[in-house]
Image 1 (cartoon, helix red, strand yellow):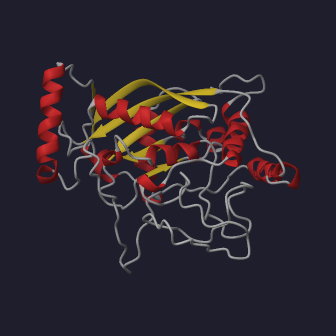
Image 2 (cartoon, rainbow, N blue to C red):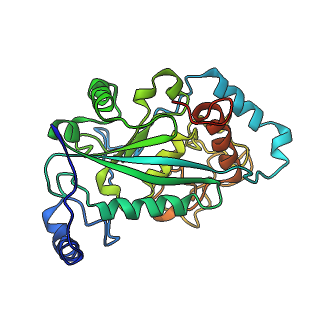
Length: 313
């Protein structure tokens, strides 16, 4: 295992590489070329034929204080007002490219893909008071890490070794590890922000490399990194703890526009299929709610900043 920098290529060479990848991507890789926009959704079925969840995040709050925040933000007083961000936060992003070899199929992502994904991430957070700055790319050749690591408890030791070896920054630096997830159907995972107080080195986001450069998986997982749950995580009641995300009892896949799905008919609103924290397709997910933005701001102030508003180390 060793660290490498992406070689500097001329503009003409980059254009040629992207052209041939667009032409031959569907032949050379089991994934369609992501740059052309013809990505396929990574959908796997388990042994019983059920669709596997694309997110491997454990959204259980380990800190009871976050549960108290949920109760406070979900109070009747807060339900009556619309949150407008008064403060802005900028987070550093370190891309940790974990590859099996020097090919795209092996996880070796071009800088151009990372740049495009950063632009997409910031577009998705427009108006939230939250932005992201790409500060570094670390490239590591490790077939074992690339092919074996996922969000399961069985790979915890591998994940820990990788984080201890590579992690950069503190509470306001999001380390994004791009991996193969060859043995699982997930597209990504993240730690919740309260985990930083317990084990700061393990604070991380993992992403299937084929979701770059135009997917919403990084947006979804960064939402977890800032405290958000899935709208369906705790069923119709108590729900995700955000007052303006309609109650939802189960996952939804695809993009069922016009079907008016309402899995919690006794509570107001249809299932929020267009929310970034859903399992619907990339093209279906378009926004965070004001309540989710307020929740992220509160979680930032509680877990990623200290008492005087500076980044935790």
